[in-house]
Amino acid sequence: MKKVVTFGEIMLRLAPPGFLRFSQTNSFDVIYGGGESNVAVSLANYGIPVDFVTRLPENDLGKCAMMELRKRGVNVENIIWGGERLGIYFLETGAVARGSKVVYDRAHSAMSQIEKGMIDWETVFKDADWFHWTGITPAISQGAADACLEACEVASRMGVTISTDLNYRKKLWKYGVEPETIMTPLVEHCDVILGNEEDAEKHFGIHPEGVDVTQGHSVSTKAFESVCRQMMDKFPKAKKVITTLRGSISASHNTWAGVLYDGKTLYESNTYQITHIVDRVGGGDSFMGGLIYGLLTYEGDDQKALDFAVAASCLKHTIKGDANQVTVDEVEKLMGGDASGRVSR
Image (cartoon, rainbow, N blue to C red; front, side):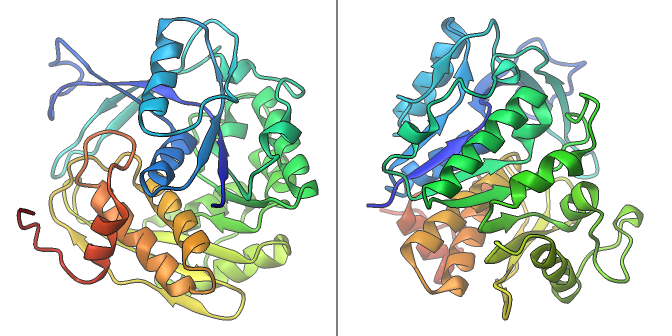
C-alpha cells in the first residue's frame, strides 16, 4: 500500500468550552492539532500508511502531542526531539454573526527552531510515495522554510509525488521576508497544489481575472479557472490545481464545494449546505486528506477524488477538534447522496 509523509508543526489548542468568549471562560478544552498533522490523521483513518515528521520538545506536552498522533494510527518514529516548548494557539469559537478568533503563541517553539540538516530525509522517504507540506511551515521561521525546501529537494530527487496546501497566514509571516521569495522555490517542486484565490494573491500576486479579492467578492468556479491557468504557467511541474469554495452565510452556516483543474478540464463538485457547524477549524486539512486518499485510491478518476475530498471535509465540520474522525464508508455514504444523519443501528 502507498505511504504518505507529512511535515509541519503540531500545536496545543486551548479553547473556551462551547461558544464562550475568552473574557468569559475559566477553563480551556485541550486538543492537539496542526495543518499537516490533521492531514496525517485523516489518512490514517482511511487506512493509508502515513508518517508525520516534526520537531517536538522533550517534555510532557511534546510527548502528549506525539501520543495523540500515535493513538490515531500515525507513525511517529521520524519525529525529532529538541527545543523548549510546544507551540500553542487559542481558539474562540464564533456563532451566527460573530466570527471565530485565533490567537497564536508559537514564537520560539521547537518546530520554529528547526534547521536544515536535522532530519535524514532520504531515510524518511525510503518507502514513501507522497509528501505533503503546507504554506504554514515556511511561514514559521527561516529555519523551518529551509528544512521544508530540503525535504522537497530530496523528495523530488527520489521521485516522490509532492503536494502543498498554500495556506496563507498573515499573522505568521513575521521574520522579514516576502512570502513569494520563500514559497516560489518550494512550490516549484509540487505536483498537486491546493489553494484558494486569496492564497494565490497573497503568495504570488495571482488573482482571478476581473475580481479583486480584497473587496469581498465571491469567486465563481469559472473565475477560479483563470487562477489555475496562471498557477500552472508559473509552476509547470504542477499536474493539478485545486481549491475549496466556501460561502460564509454566517459563522454557523456555510456552503461548501470544490474544483479541480488538470490543465485541460475543470472538475466541479456538488455544493453542500452546512447549516450547523460544530467546528470549522481543520476543514481545509480534511479536504486535503480526502483529496490525497482519492487521488491514490481512485487513480485516474479526478472527479471521484474531488467528490471524496469535498464530502470528507463536509463531514469534518460536524466534528469537534482539529482533525477529521470519519471513515471511508461514512464519506462514500455522503457521496452517494445520503445526508439524512439517521441513526446507524
